[in-house]
Amino acid sequence: MRIGLHDAEKEYLKKKSFPNYALMKISAWHKAQGDTAEWWNPLYRYDRVYSSKVFDFTPVDPYLPEDAVRGGTGYRDIPMDKTLPPEIDDMFPDYSVYPDCDYAIGYITRGCPNHCRWCVVPQKEGMIRPYRIWKEIVRQDTDKLVLMDNNILACEYGLKQLESLIGSGYRIDLNQGMDARLVTEQVADILSRLDWIRFIRFSCDQRAQIIPVRRTVELLMERGVRPYRIFIYLLVTSDLEDASERVEALKGYKSINLYAQAERNERLGVMPNDMQMEFQQRYVYSGRYRRETWEEYCRRKGLS
Ligand code: SF4
Image 1 (cartoon, rainbow, N blue to C red):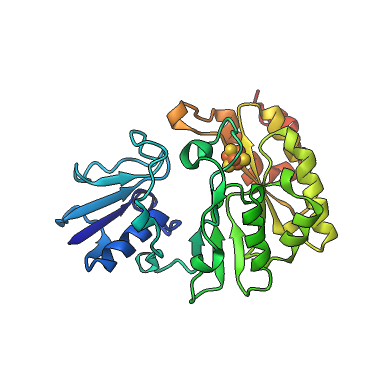
Image 2: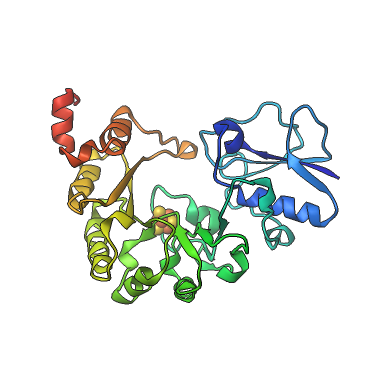
């Protein structure tokens, strides 16, 4: 069979994009059956086309065949908890479809025990549970491992796996941001001894997380981690006072990396307003926050 693969984000962004885990597994499975798999081209005919769309805002390709097998949270008519068939999910991803990707990706755990208002993970993945051992995920041609676990610290198994990565020769990134509320002295010991590709990432999505995030930064600093290695995701809801308070509480760690994300969930009809975008783009991305408070910034710009 001739298989066409469609990565909606790759098509839309027209540049190097994060590899699509499901499509790589689908490609691997079909190739193992003796099929061919290639990027879908609307001018060619295929026996089957698979399309994945991760984000709500990525446009739907109007030329996709009607019988394309679709998946991903970006397709709003597809149940959020739809998963790959087990025989495909068990495949090692076919990295050859993303030749620029020089790292392995995967999950050690799936799911999350929490139910944050803005997050689709509990609905999509369910309760946290073990999923893979890291040795099954790594590639032999690179020492980089990017883990997409949503709340690895909430799972004893996940912590044990992280601990066993210490001294393995692999450099890791946990790209979803860890929950600082779960960082104890023992967890900080593990995190500080791991080899990170670049950043150690945490989330600070509401003011209640300020104290745990600050405590985590201090625990890591005591163990030799410099603030420039720490990266904090800041959810920016319409409560900009809350977001501003978090920025002020964290920017004192001089070289810490703050990354604002305006809340957006098209499925729930949640779209960022202009002030959230101003906060995200012009105030935090630009680094203005280092020189003035949000209040001072708004006054100077005549924003209300
Ligand atoms: S802790 Fe993280 S993954 Fe879990 S529900 Fe909250 S935002 Fe989502």
